[in-house]
Length: 161
Image (cartoon, rainbow, N blue to C red; front, side, top):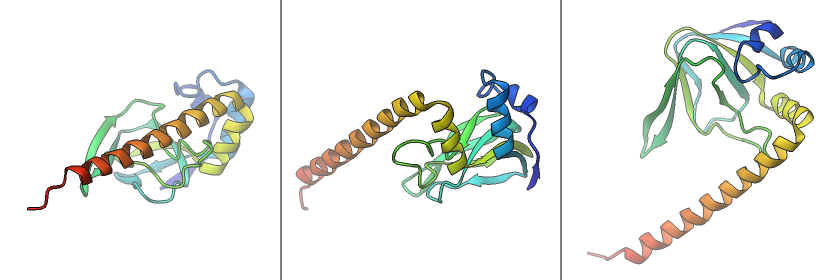
């Protein structure tokens, strides 16, 4: 891994950051960096969510565990795609990576530590953070209710042999 300083003009070319003003881009660059990765894992599902990543150049695959197997859910080389601790700013805080990300060829990312990314989002976009918090809380609550219901239905349909 090679870490390089970030330049605002680099970030401005990524769709995720294209609408940010010069001051916001400067804050991102002051608090993040550009990092090069060789093919292999960037983050692994279930490990502590420490960093937010934005693809500058290269290709990544995302995958989720299902029945103990890694299932690829996305493959992209689209500049500006983000991954890692992208939910770090939500009320529940993202404690663990919710997917695994691997690069398939040498790639470069803009990288920020999760707490720094969370502070940037809360400082710069408080209304958006509030709205996304509500969605995250509602989604988590719905998932817990559905999971509980499915377990009860599975128990109710169990017929011992």
